[in-house]
Image (tube, rainbow, N blue to C red; front, side, top):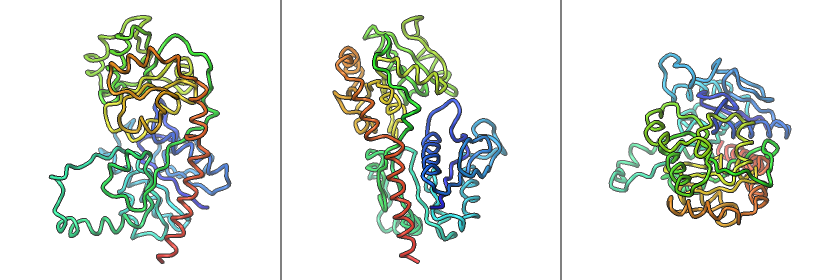
Length: 359
């Protein structure tokens, strides 16, 4: 198949110094190339890929305020370039959001969308009356019907008001990038953005209550006040310490050496890549029963799914009961790049068949 992959240009593929959807796009793109597909990646010039690269910007937009544009402008710029070349592809796979479907009537190539962003349920009292909805949203829904829509968790899809041509495909990682470590060190880890939504302060507080060592890793750029007020007071040398932003090599070492990773998520995170990365290293997850956590973690087998901080503290004391080999096996079975790409190939084929029937 001739496949286009389109990203928002906010980050390179793979991203530098962060996690996120660009890593998923990287894994997906490289595996598709390995399987013999003709893949074109619309991304920044500094992206690294074995696919054909169409560089829409010279560097990630997130690093420089180009032209005063917003995030949507970069997404549409990438999609517009792919649309100009649409006749060269059997399918266009976008990772920029549903705005891609404004191009559905303008090109003769089917579109597949992966929804990477959280979907917030709208209270029923705020919904438009049915007749108004049908009048003003009919055209949008018609375009939406033309594509295939992929959600990255069941929780995310259940929150969506539109589930037309929809399917859940879990994110996958390249297992060879993560080393299994049978015996951990003497600490727990929090790895991710240091933000209120991610619950970094809760991880720190839980570690203090449990009287265990905790390493906090990740960027707090843009959340300096939060870090200063909510996290820094818990820091204590050789006990609860901030170790900075983790490169891939540093990340693997941190994850593999930890007794468990703490995931006290506070928002409807669509997936949570760090959980499968940790389990790939053999490290169990202790996460709050929220968002996609209960879909990714098998309670009592690959970690613990808990209701609050007190339960998190209790789980930390029982973490030695988790067999680390089960964590690795769980990722191998359910969250590998191979499994993810197998599912996407089926979706591409279905999108192409469906489009041919409509013509």
